[in-house]
Length: 119
Image 1: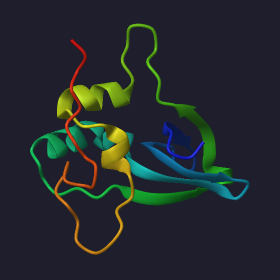
Image 2 (image 1 turned 90 degrees about the vertical axis):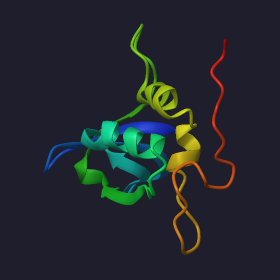
Image 3 (image 1 turned 180 degrees about the vertical axis):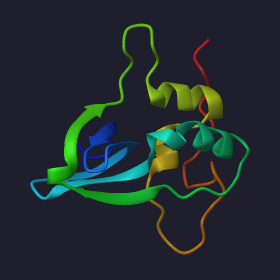
């Protein structure tokens, strides 16, 4: 389902990516996001308003080990929830691929508005 936030586990070399699913086809997976190892750095960059462009990547199907929805696990929040708490921004907006030439600062993409936490 395009637009879903997922965690992709890859092999050869082993790595994990967190991002927005752009396409899933027999040939492979396309997503817009970051390596999971860079998640905390990304949240800090976005919170500080630094320019950020998500990587738009394609992984051939032979590298895909697992793709899972970014959902909470019991009392553990999802990465999306953690991102929202740290940045006050919806990860779906921040991870959406950019159109055009200049890169906006984090949170300045069209429709990127701080999300209010429920009371």
